Length: 257
Length: 172
Image (tube, rainbow over all chains, first blue to last red; front, side, top):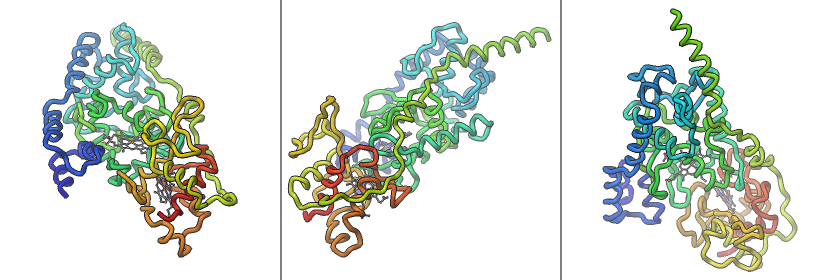
């Protein structure tokens, strides 16, 4: 009971996950203070500031908007709809992939999706859409429909060392059950808002982590082979998971266990 | 007008160029290699479920632990922590989903297996073959199961599945 009221006070299921992972049913005052401090002062704000500096130096909002074929003032709403079909890509892409395109468009060397530049820039660019509602449209066109269907198939495919799928732990009928002491989050719920809150600072890793990386971490833990960043299947997973959080506000950087 | 057409051409050219700079590796081979064999029905081997204490000790160890790297306690006779290839041996981590006698930090995705024998086996609700099949490949009696597959995918050997079944069915 005490645990429950603390969780409610913390406003976030992911934080409640942290205290359960410690196999404690209540949280010490010093831990509570640490979470409160991080909520106020998210360490990933530094990565976002880095991303802003890099983005303004190498690309810039005007050039980025032009490359995407939208007006700069419409960027926030447009960004809130990723992954989406982008004409100059000819396919459905993530924000991170549009930054690779923008770098090439500006005549720059194209960094890897893993690179600090792309990771911090994509966090910054996504933060331009803060407070916008996630507005992905999985029926917008044939490409999005295909990616949504592929994403669902990848999400539900049992595979790997233990024959698990994402759905084994994230299907609606077991949300809220515990895996060991960890409550299983509802990826679409307002408190989790999975797509709207990544990139997030992950306390257990002391680093900012992107959504695709977070999904790779689930794969690794559950003995599923890791799907590479940027692959069609990974983008499709991002489409599928993002669609679960449609309508939830974007709040970057998130703070997670 | 002319300018607009020029811009249009530039955009078209740009489009072709930009698609090629996007990092987009092919994951088909990775997923193919990671695929799970079709659900498989098994017949429990002769003498599988036993009250042999070494077998039960192995089953217990596999049930409560995740893998050889995370586990502090030494492995019981007949089990290793590190495989010949240097990788850690994977165990069942069954407590992630099931409570059972003495479980610490257990989850509740699966049913509580405490007192399994008196509650379910002695009265014939469940039999040894059911327990064996459930652990070996739970998809056979429940296509939508959230449980792990343990034999059909080669995670464990037949004997290890018997060790697990012996532990679940043992008096504790």
